[in-house]
Image (tube, rainbow, N blue to C red; front, side, top):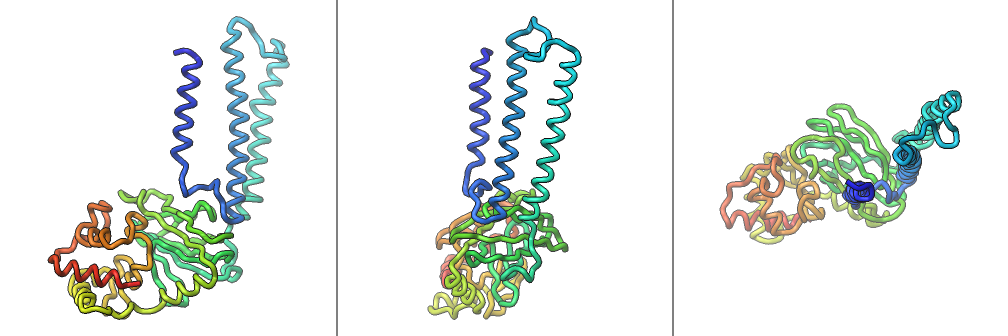
Length: 334
């Protein structure tokens, strides 16, 4: 294969791999100081790697273009000069570069991304990972939601995370580094958003068949909007306003729904699946798998395995009128 064709093929493959990593979950689009420190470290490591790789490629090209000549360019074929060159470029420079990178990453980046003491943050949120969704609690209030975390903008928030079953890893790339969610061993990480927005995250530790669809979103709201949201989440479920919605609540309580889910204000106290008290205040279902719209909700109730294979929720054996009433009821949980 000609050299130019091999180079073009390599460039295409590298470019494809680089573009495949582009998306909304990017460490290169930071929105907090810890995330900016991580981005800087990434660029420092990339530049250093490119320089080292470029130097190695340069030497390979020289060796290929002058196969009959001995020695090194500039240095010549003096044994002492060759040994000194190998010692400098093969030992001294790598050792100095690695020590400098170690010191910079530990002194600057790790300290900047370490969680502060809980009393130094404005609020604490408890996030529990389960296959394959996130439960979100706001201590000091009855508010419990799933997969969508709301925080006030420009506020230091202490995230305490652990796992219900296997090891998970909580990661919001635009706000801070990832931290493992371990069964029975809480870990902490601080999240801070310097402007309102929606910041996507995910589980960063392989945890089973739906690991790739165990996503989470952080919504940074203005203080007034966050307070209104939290006050609403703390209330019990709204009273069903129509006869069809009231019938739907009875369907929910009489079927296996109530054994897995909680709806505050009713007798449903299940803890296997997400709290549904304010289900329709969320934008998505199934850990950001599908939109939280009526048609998707009905499909999820009838056959969740089609939409998220392996999910712990079973398909419900209900009639058409029961499904219509149940969906009407769930649509009112705002």
